Amino acid sequence: MISFSKHSGIHTLKVMQELPIDISEAWDFFSSPINLEKITPRHMRFHITSGVPKAMYPGQIISYRVSPFPGIKTNWVTEITHVVDKKFFVDEQRFGPYSLWHHEHHFEERDGSVLMTDKVSYKIPLGFLGRIAHFLFVKKQLRSIFNYRIKALEGKFER
Image 1 (cartoon, rainbow, N blue to C red):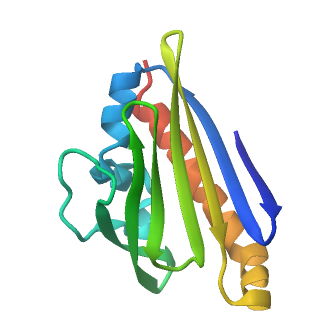
Image 2 (cartoon, rainbow, N blue to C red):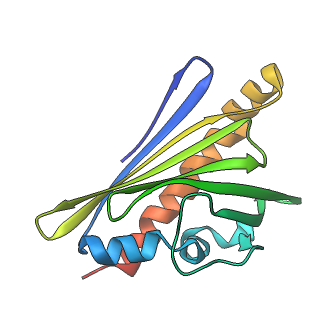
């Protein structure tokens, strides 16, 4: 399930997906930034440009190169700000295309599965032009990226 809402000029994207795996397998996969490349559409040319240690930790800086739209490449730097083992972690943009990007990754163990909830609070720069861009491109692009992710995860963790 993918939903969007807005408050005080901040957009919120919420994605919920249940996967037929245990909490340890979910955490091992999602807490490793290297796996983000595996669940991002290829046309975005997503590539981690910083080294990635095995264990995620608060304060970890991760830099990426990404092409959000054809012909446009950008650097994106995020910081892992919070980590609670097998419960949640948060990454926040430090440099990149958004005025604000706060991405919470929550994991809830269920009977034989894990409910994952992504909550992304973001703000587009450029005022009125940013609002137009959000309406015309950004919201559709984010929906497409997370739809791709849902399908990729269903394929990877199919039992």
